[in-house]
Amino acid sequence: MLRRPRTSLRIHARFALIALLGATLLVAGCQDDDNPNDPEDVGVTVVPRDSASATATETGEPTGTATAESTETATGTATGTATATETITAPEIIERDEISFVSPEGWVGNGDTWTSPDGDVTLLFAAQDREPGSEPEAVMLPQGAVNLDREEIDTPLGPGAIHTIELTEATEQGVYEMHALVRTDDRIYDWWIAAETREALDAHRDVLDQVLASIQRTDG
Image 1: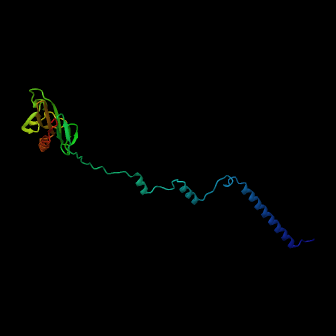
Image 2: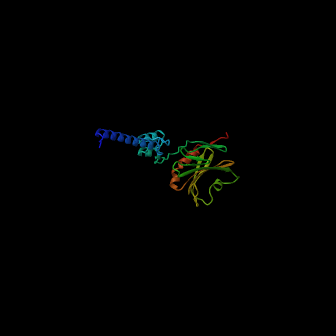
Image 3: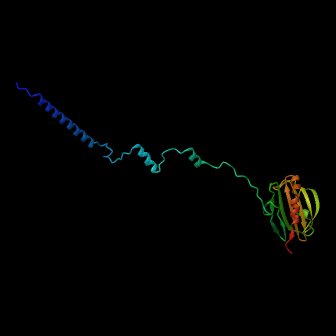
């Protein structure tokens, strides 16, 4: 029997192994090309994790939580209350009918009413035509008031009287009033201060005196 040389058998075995490896690589390459999940085959761009964070930052999307400092700045509100300031009103020349007078300094005016800076006392003014034979007290003083004091005075308009009264019914201005009544030939004028207590009323008598001293005629 003839025997093949060992060298020839080894050569054929190597060629067979090489052919098998080549076929295996060819099949593997075809499978990769036909993989439907390959990102490049479906048009998807694969971005590394670090690149994704950078892209989110560039597009303005929030990438983290707000810091305590930024949150406090965004949500902080004023917690203090405004300090009350005192209203200072300069004296004004008030013209009524044929006369004028000066309002008290620092008192807040509203029409013919002025309120003291502390809000405790009110100064008021009223005037009306005088009927022949009528008395100022009967015309200007509130009905039912108790007359506590009466004092004769002189004013730039002529003589008058100050009546301190207590009201039987409280009003918006107070319980006690001090009326300075002055009459002319055809008019009756009344300046008065009102307060809730007699002490507050007496403490502001100087204000009433200053107003009366500032009276002037405007009719020549």
